[in-house]
Length: 162
Image 1 (cartoon, rainbow, N blue to C red):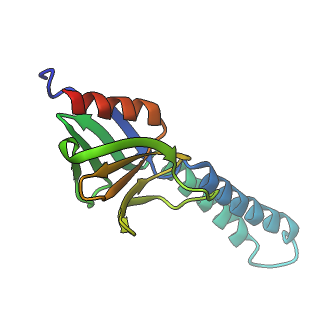
Image 2: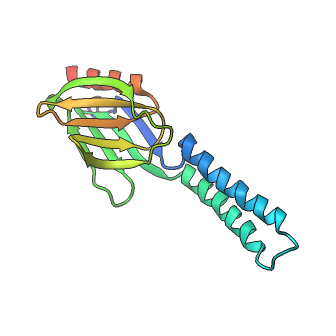
Image 3: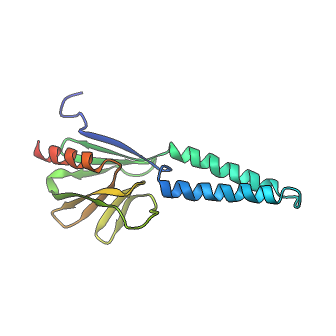
């Protein structure tokens, strides 16, 4: 691999690792297990609560290893590769005029999104509270959620300079 093709930054964002949604899934599973325990001898269909609780736990574990998107900074561009059928998004850093770190959203729980166009912003987010905001010449803002905002910002600034 040439020096020019070596990524300055590489991060994988996983679908099921956001604390808010993990907590929601665990509360739902605990509710199912509690309902199974309480209704163990009273109803014939009590096994359904146990089955649903186990399925919620299993799906939660699988989602923790399911890649939502990958962020790569290389060759004066930020490349966002999404899950299976999503399109590759390549942001040319020559058109970026402003790079800043900020909180992704004031809300406690945010849904994962990939390439969501809304109100002059394009959002990419899987989990966490931090994001890097990239503003291009036309005023379009790319919001890239990341677990390492300082490292991503430094890599973008370094790629812009080279």
